[in-house]
Image (cartoon, rainbow, N blue to C red; front, top):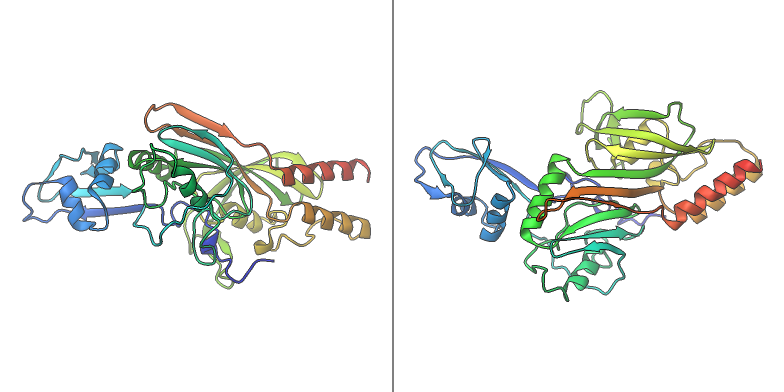
Length: 348
């Protein structure tokens, strides 16, 4: 069962809504004298550092009149400035904790980790320690290449507590700014694997509908198909294997809203398997035979979380500009569940 502290804010899955980016625009006053843009921006964002601003410029995240500029650009009256900073100032001090991590790649600029289900990504209400960020803070203590002034230990994106799979972490301000722009522009390549209730009628499909907080249940997000509320969201899916009562699907997000896959799949009647928050922890499809019910309950115990895995991750390296691509194998709980379903269908 979820605790009372298990809120949407504890289990974020959305770059735009998780507070990882700050995107703002400024119209320069008509009386403004010529001034370097890095100094000018520090006047308007006093909680930022000059290094953060200069690295944002270097990464191409500061635009004047629609064109990227360097930190020595001098602002002029009437200039229209647009800025993307990787994250706002930290809200709490990160305490390093010696927690095992499955690191599948690391160099001087980036780290890629395969997160286990059950680990919260960042400290927050109800989860102040034991998180991925606490573990990374400990790991980076012995890394001379890591810049300790990063407010959120290089966090670029997040996945839900009970979602397993891949995350990329930046190890310096420039890498953070460079990667942040890729996630903001949605040029990264990410695929998710999910088990959903029911047998899909089509092998491929697209789900479109605004996503916003549920009007009655604040613990859920809701799909507003008519666009009356929420933010535009698009999920593409492809069937990988059918198990009569559930389906293994691959998901590609065109947008990245909070709980997007979970809310979209519930909207089309295919709630994720054992997704308690979205009522997927009941036997939603199938027959009423006691043998079948006992079998599904057994699978719930094998896979005690929503069946969602961040399977692949691709991005451009901030320094080498090489295209990086990583895959995470299906976690043990989801793999065992699949094998049980295959065996059940072969013998029933």
